[in-house]
Each structure stands twice: as C-alpha cells, then as structure tokens.
Length: 241
Image 1 (cartoon, one colour):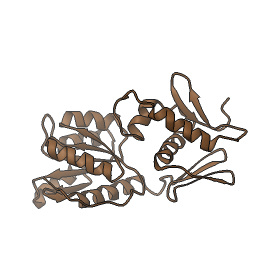
Image 2 (cartoon, rainbow, N blue to C red; image 1 turned 60 degrees about the vertical axis):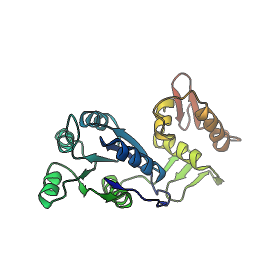
Image 3 (cartoon, rainbow, N blue to C red; image 1 turned 90 degrees about the vertical axis):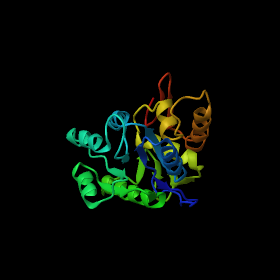
Image 4 (cartoon, one colour; image 1 turned 180 degrees about the horizontal axis):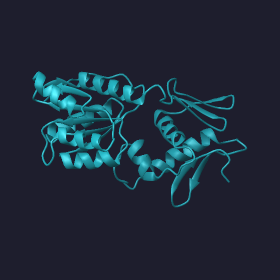
C-alpha cells in the first residue's frame, strides 16, 4: 500500500525510464501517474511473467517490483534477470517487512527493499539513488553532433556560438535524438520515450515538433543535422547526404 500525497516534486534532473511490476491495479495506476508527474517514463506490468518479459526486452534505468505477484513472484523475477547477467537496479515492495524478509529479498538480487505502507516521496528518492549509482561516473551529461551541443545539466543548447532556446518537449526530443546520433530513430521510439505513448494515436505531434526543432537548429545553417529517413524515421548526424 502506498501512502498517497499531494506533494509537488521539483523537475527531475535526469529522466528515468522505469518498469513497475504491481498487480494491485489501484496502487499500480497511482505509481505510474506519480512517477510521470515527477518527470519520468513509467511502464507497467501486472504480473511476474509480463514483468520479466518487459524487463528483458526494455531498456530501463530501474525496476520497482512487488514481491507477491501472480504467475511469478517478484524474487523469482529478479533472480531470473540476475542469472542472465541483467544488473538493472531493482527495488522490492512488500508487505513482508521483517528483517529476515528484507535479507531474503536482497540476497535474491534486489538492490533495495521498501516495506508497505510507504510514502511515494521516499520511494522516488530511493529509485533516483539506485539509478544514479547504476549510471556510474561515466554517465554522459552532454552530447555533441558537429557544432551542435546539448548540456543536460544546464539545459543549454548551442550551435556554434549561437544559443538555441527550446521548449521542454523540444529539449527532450533533441536529447533523445542526440543520444542516438547516427542511428535511425522511429516514430514508435519517440512516442514511447519522449511522449510516453505506447501506441500511435494517429497524431501529427511528432511531425510538428520535428519541424519546429529543425527550424531552430538547422535554419540558416550550411550543413543540416536533422534528417528525415523516408519510411523509417529520423536521424541526427553530421555530414549525412
């Protein structure tokens, strides 16, 4: 059980992509909503088997896993990931809060253990700590493509000597493209990682934002960096013809 609050959280320094594995629908929906309001991307699995499948195929910064789950319990899920060499940080949620229960959870491969009931503020703080530790000292805080630079910490974007002002969504879009510089980024990838949609709702939101972003970073430039790959998606790259 999560203790619901009306706290307003400050903007996240770095967006996390999280997987929540929780079978209680009310708690699960609240957690997803709360993490998204805190500035993060949150996927949801309703049982252990679905959670394992998503964890194996997704690229997550951290997992929030309920211990008692249908089909496969949380400890078994985490243990299966560890056996395959997956070291994604996992925080276990459980109504079993005795010392022996916590030890068992940690020995099963969990990185942290939070007994129920708990406050979301504490859960958020613990997950952020796990994600930072997992990212390690080599985590990139800036990206560069040609003469275009993006600084994640200061939220500053420049091309050459010119500073570019971007709206928050445009910044997230450019950050994701630059993180995958030289790679084709599909519409589905953008919908899931920048807009947090898990389907294409027949919207032109991506086209509109790509057009705005292109006008800000490429307009008046001799060498364009943002390219549309017909039938595939988009790519940001220096020197693409």
